[in-house]
Length: 538
Image (tube, rainbow, N blue to C red; front, side):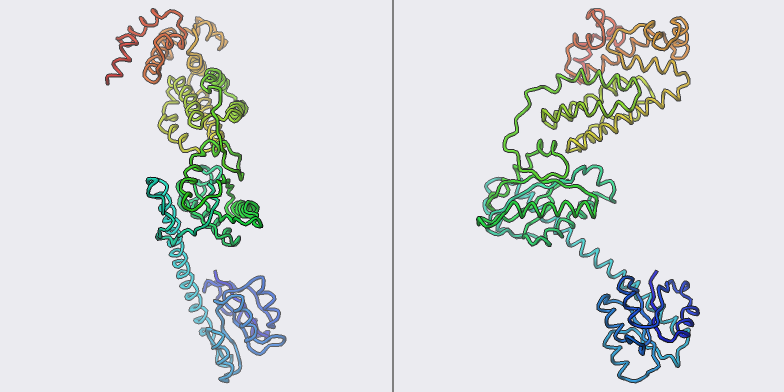
């Protein structure tokens, strides 16, 4: 709704216009009325209207002076002059000020001013639509320039070293052409990118918003730095490096990056981090960018909102993360079995601190966590309510898309809380909670020797009563059920791991391998070795 200001030293005229004009019907808001130009100008400095209707002859400041000063603040202000004067001099001055109408009070009709206001409103709406279209067009052009820069650099980075020699002489659609001077390349990435982008319509819109803020900061810093988006959550800044000893290159760079961090936090509530490369000649920039792209481990373990120099040497930990797998799997199994969500954060924090201290390879960390989750999935597979909500493919895709330790930690905590919530709800909704609890106990302790007495004791039930109840609800005896679960688990281990038959036997709590093989053959129709061999051939 567009806002109107009325200014006239004739109060009856003000009262007449304010009360008789159908403001709401015209989709306008009468913002304020004033009896002199000075008062109107003071008010407009804080609350600028879209439309000004003013008399000419007023004390302190006349209408033409008021119009001129208000148009200096808002050039597209729409103005109608009310006057008792029909002289050419006044009309000429109004014309120079780009006044939309010059209305004589003596001949003024209410329909005339209503028609004027309706026309002005339509013009404002049309101008607004034109501005929006122009802004969209400018954004498209600017976005295409960003995309062109990224495409240009990807072609340079991924082409053969021979072709990189004179790359900086190339022109491209974005207008980019590098000067013959050293630069400090730096890798930029949004912290917690996976979650932050969810607040925007699309990933492209999110990245473009970030690019605009960074571009504005670089322009204001007057650094001649070059910014371009490279690929998903990886962008680069080429910061000019001055060889003069008088220049504090890293001081200026650090100031610009801090301003960038402040602006992104203020306008988009986004945190950004940087890894700085070494001062580099133009012809060697592709190689330095390639080195920064290889800083995956440093990037993975970095704290949020950090400015850091590139690690020169990254040594592998002398510990094997998978040697701690069984311990973590046992703790996670107990955590799920206890159904206490307050234990999830301490469990995840403990293991992530361990991984942070040893800086294991990020791919190894992801593989380790994925294996933990799949282990829980397999243990809970016998609980029918859980199967549809824990897809291996989705887990794999999600964990691959995560690029930092902090994101991975948050994702794992949410994932485990979701698992715990589903299992707890399913147990609560089960027709027979004792049987559901018994099935959960079997799933969580599948690697043990399980007896009916042990489970009945856990449920505080008489063993004979539990045996009859289980057979009635499940349709098979407890012993048959446990055997079925263990044999299905054996098939999964043979399919998905390289464990020997002996290891599979041990993992399922059997101390006699011959007995295990006999049970497996009776259940599946072939021995474990034959079963795995048949799968390999397929």
